[in-house]
Image 1: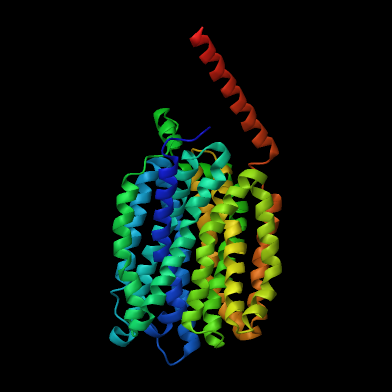
Image 2: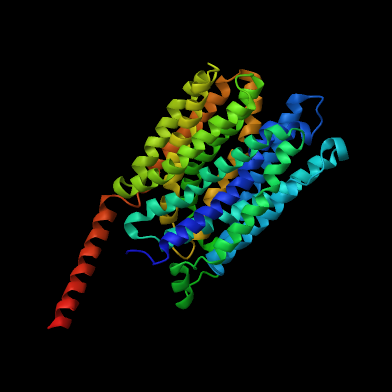
Length: 441
């Protein structure tokens, strides 16, 4: 009930790993919005370059479900820890390779091909990462604080976003290709630190128990698709509101601000870094709030706000005022996106049994990445056809999708569940006191 003695170390270790993986994966999104259209694709047609850059970004998201399937299957079969170490190492190698790639000016179309291949490897590694990290934390955490502990792991994502954009901001003065190469090359240092930390993390107690009892699923993917496909569909829709919403309100907005000349790169990255810094605390706080009021109420709040924020977001950006732009990023990320992300770790884990939990949660989480990965690509077409109104309405539509999913998804930590845990804790405490009195007598 109180979790394992290693619960804090596991949560922090998982969070650090998530930070590094996000630095690598999300850093690609920043570079795609700000640099890759010129560096890896023909520069004669800016729109085509932007579309190709975002398409490459989307490919990484498209293969994430495959990474989630592989990582989830192995996590349920051989353990959570080996998957965590392997995914981090694979991501690190791929990211450093990006920093070494030749540009379009050097090798022509091969530049885009090589970038795409490395992005595929990134997507596979990131797809395998989330389920293992979250499940390790969830299964080590106390019953009453699973939202808080998984929120700590989820907070690794805004921290990674902060570090990635800080690296890009600091590298701006370097100019040329070094402005985007250096942030990717610096990943080598983070990976070395992350591997050392993850090797010291203990295996999940629930998986260890399943293994000792011979209850490990022989084919967890088949089992979860047969028995829990409805939970996968619900979690997929819940996740779309968060991740695809991010693709509109952050990834596309980076390009929107540049194209409309509303903000320079320094202001844009500073605004995003401010939101990310607040998001580290916000994600953890949102997760902790679910331990007190339940998972569903917090998610409903976040999705309703997402529905309402679409048009005001772009009206705020269109003012061109520095303060307004910072505020827009803060509301979009630290409130709308982080509110949903802070809930997902605990809620998604509780929707599946221990035997198939990594496969089920990973599959639902990463399938939604296909939608979010190609959202910037779709939004460019909407923007070209309708101006900012199309992207604004799409953002709200994603929020509506999440709202409907939250309504039809069962509450896993409501008043009944909290009361049952309190009863078990009271019974356990009474049993301990009786044993203590009997021993003294």
